[in-house]
Length: 182
Image (cartoon, rainbow, N blue to C red; front, side):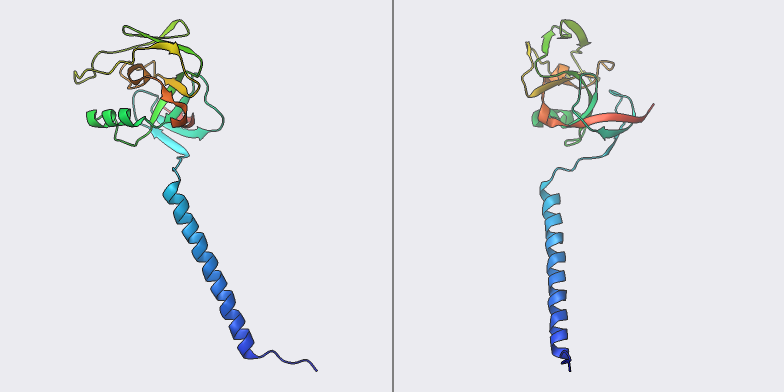
């Protein structure tokens, strides 16, 4: 005849199972907290309200950005501070910009012209809409392997590389694909 399990053993086993489940849930929760604390959030959808690129809804696309693509980019710290001080854009808000030149391409700033590959890609303004002097990037060289040049050529008052120069490629969050634009 088979021995019947004691209720004491069943109850103790249930307590151990519950304890393991609680420990697993706590570990998962702590892991999620740590991931969100240290990970940089990446948006999947972006609304651009700035006139320096087509106003509308974009999604983050896959693959590397090419010349002519719109990208979502985090501004270098010093540029972000200037944009915030002048009221162009709050600190920490990424920009929507068009890739004008990639690493190795030759970029020159000459007077008010930005020349890429021997052709004028954009013109620069001396002052912003409030009469404040704009910084001018003044170099003539091939872009380093870790730099990109971003210009919204259709908007002469766009705060972009024509004023602050090449941007580290690591600042690009991703290539943007328009879903709906005005």
